[in-house]
Image 1: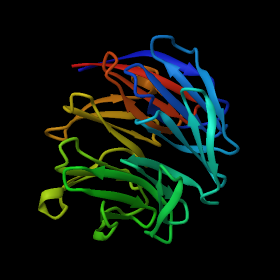
Image 2 (image 1 turned 60 degrees about the vertical axis):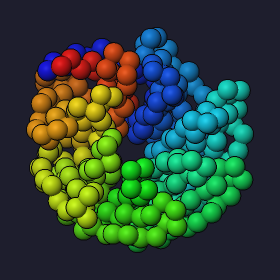
Image 3 (image 1 turned 180 degrees about the vertical axis):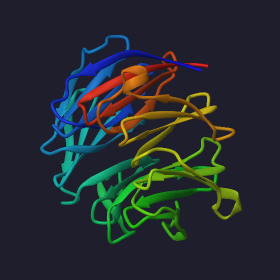
Image 4 (image 1 turned 120 degrees about the vertical axis):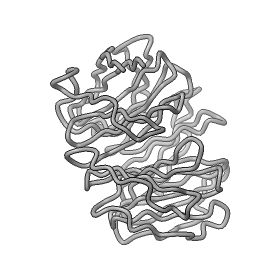
Length: 300
């Protein structure tokens, strides 16, 4: 395997906290501490388009694929929904005064992970709160869906992972998973495994079909692991960390294949916060507290 740094996008004035696909093969959105939401095109490096300016920092974005509505989580200020076709804010609501750490959309529902330990379920059509799910007395940091089992998992700052039924939002299982905050939960593409990462710098993999029994516990980074993402062909996954590095792993064996860092590849200078793996020339995108977005080509 080889890694090549393709480009660096600069435009944010503060830490970049999140990146998501714009549902084209080559475009994505980013947001961060400056409240800017910028759309980028991998075909046109560094020609970012400012599409929204939130009233506060933004940790979470989500795109409703049905109508290309972009959900923007303004920390402490609630939600803005951007009509990306006409480029205007069409809805806004102070659904919460807490930080919004994650937004995930499933069908006609949006799930918001909040800093007060609650998951808010919003009916997208009516833009009304359908349910408050009290998960923890500390922050809920991440949400992941598993269509194969009709479940969703959450990770929180109480070191726990909770698994819920998608239909009635009933709690099915609690896993005391890490020794500190759980920052990311992600199901494998086939739905057979749940991957969890957190402040304890460990990557843990759980067998969904064995009542979420532990498969492996890997001390994967030096400091907190912020995110995990799978390659489009599902053969690899990548993790990123507060230790400034990105690591690429084999999805079948869970073995480390490559380290992307400042010394080896002119990587990020501070915490790497989020990853996006695109089908565009198999490019992996990372964002960081250093205000930069880097693009990496992965050769197998």
